[in-house]
Image 1: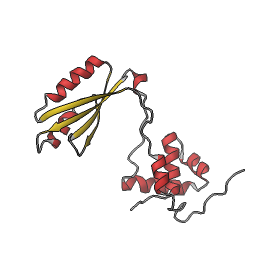
Image 2: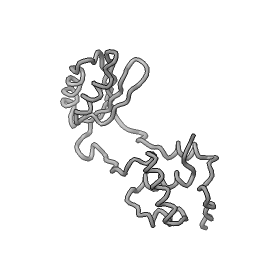
Image 3: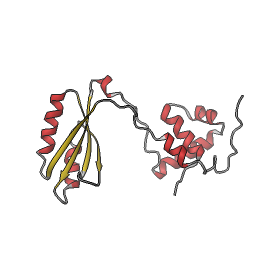
Image 4: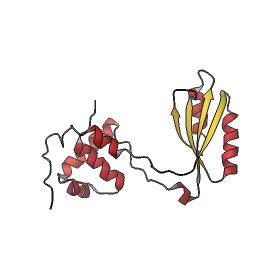
Length: 170
């Protein structure tokens, strides 16, 4: 069951665009009271919906132009141990347990192709890794986003629990 409504989605959208907006700026943009914004942010943080405010980095701009996805097939029962070992590698930026042929999908980032090859060799040498497939990302035509999905899922959720929809400004 979805535990957010359209007001929450709009608040999250504003925070996604600029996580440095003050509570007063958020309230003004949404046309609601500061207490409403504060209460909703507190509720979303305490429930685990909102897990933090992070900078969105352009990796090539900071000197890390190579990103790749490494699919790993593992020996049975090794996911936790291998995930722990992978998490110790600074180039590993994300790990997903998956279904299908591969057990883990690992997103990595390096500064050079040579560094990617060295990392791939480190990964396949981990005990329990039986096969790997590395796919280099060329471009990112659609960066990570969540706002359209949240808007779609809250189409019928209403705007606020006890707050009237704000009047549209001309």
